[in-house]
Length: 490
Length: 97
Image (cartoon, rainbow over all chains, first blue to last red):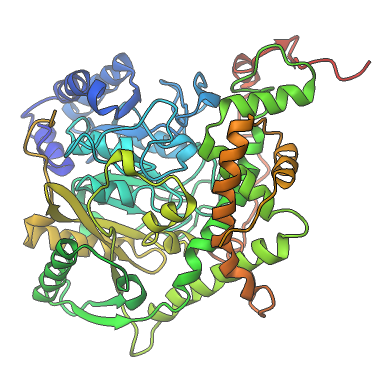
């Protein structure tokens, strides 16, 4: 069952080939066998999962199910649930239990999905490999020594290893797309405001979005359908009507114009990755797509603007962890200042501290205009670049295609520790977060046994078109869907 | 390009953010933050350019929702999460003599 896509599992449930309880037990059993090695899950609540599955079976028997009824999903552990702790992979929140569920979890619960548990991430979603998790790094199931990517590494590993049908991640600067690519999966960062952020552990408020990590674009469409939409409790969500994503998957893509931004290709791609990317371009052309080179001239500002704005937001958002109202508190504080600084000093990891300090540096009165306002100006320029290529003139395009990695996953022991290396790992991703546009990561194939991928970008609220293109590519060329067809390498 | 971040400046930032650092962490962070700061220098040429800053991805107006009570009181649950509580108050070390 773990070698089926989410949509195939939904058909199996609808046809009574297996029940949701059987499916959930299957995934829970696989977690028991493999999680000690893969470290994909931080916490699982078997009892609650099986109760949800039993309820889903009743709904299915009554013929009242949705496409997600009875489907076992995994949630990144910075998404609030009430059946497990929500740790954000930090000592600070090791024992935190949210008093409420995130809106997106509420929506998936209402759709009948089963919560298999909470997946590992970089501490507070700050990193590109899960190596900064307080609970230790997750392992890439294609090679246990390779990085699983991050920050939603546990969510990607859970799906790639067949421990969940699909999962939810969050993406502040590539954190859904990069681990999806490195684990041979499809990952969608929706348009900013498409999915409610209520109940996400806030880090990069103006940058982050939650979205699906799954086998296929079709699977992502089914999940997005359930979680998208206005949330009265999150003013940053959009009132734009939610499209019927699944019904548009079969649309032919003949005549679609795809831009190749030259700045994204002016990088040192490993030859095998470049060859697979070239093959994907040819596959798209064979389906009737027109490919043209375009320019996004302010791309070179993205890494710096992301660092400044991201760290400023991190510094501000993480100021709430003071050891008073919730979270870790140090032993025997001498006074209030000692309580604050020792609680934060003892509970935050090195990467989190670095970004808090960087953010506060950028927000100092003497630096505010030089860095913070300049980064917001860069954000405007980057956003206008996208508006220009997605505009309505004759040279404009419908979507963009870019690389999504320079090479397959590096060894975990070699994953980046400094800001420059993080910026390189995130190069293909950050501009979409700054501009708020949607982005879809898709598998390209395997290089030396490890997955690599590509990325599609579209204008705001173009998820239907992105998923349509992804689905057409994956239907016509199954090499764009990857299953780990072997047991975990020792 | 190193920015020559000083230990004094790092301590100022740590004080402002109430972040206790060990001396070993301080040495490591000095190097890492210094390297990170060099990345943001590429923005310097924008400081004087007439570009309207973009705060959120879209320039959409955020509208307030209707002023209706939608939440139930979960303070009991919230107090259970606190490290120290007495009579519905968070306990902290004495701050007034």
